[in-house]
Amino acid sequence: MGFSTSGATAILFIGLLIAVGIAYPTLETANDRRMTAMEDRDQRALEIRNTDVAVESAVYNGSSGTLTVEIGNTGSTTLSVSETDLLVDGVYRSGYETAVEGNADRTVWQPGETLRMTADLETEPTRVKIVTENGIAETVTEPEIEVTN
Image (cartoon, rainbow, N blue to C red; front, side):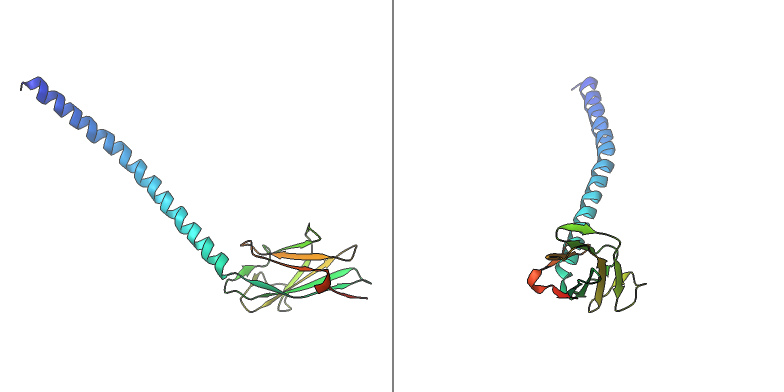
């Protein structure tokens, strides 16, 4: 073997080291992002499993046009009041009043507590749905909605 063979081998080896030096940080970053995404997915799945709500009452007052829904946080996840949605007859409602355990200033809804939502409606509802920030939903339909005057 002459010098040309040894020189070519050395050049190829140095090129390989440079290529690995360039590729390794990129692959390491991609693996870190993948692991972070998997941890986030697992955390969301755990929160979904631990989230549960139950509609305790849904009362529509026909004379005032007010719907009052009381929902109990029966899971073990703390929920955000502002990220809990109200749908009436399939229509997303906004601008309704909320109170946790009678306090309208509360922004979180702890396990075991009751959230009250009060919305003004034009017609008597036939279906009320509550959706939490984790996508857990509870629906009540006409027979379960109490109507008063």
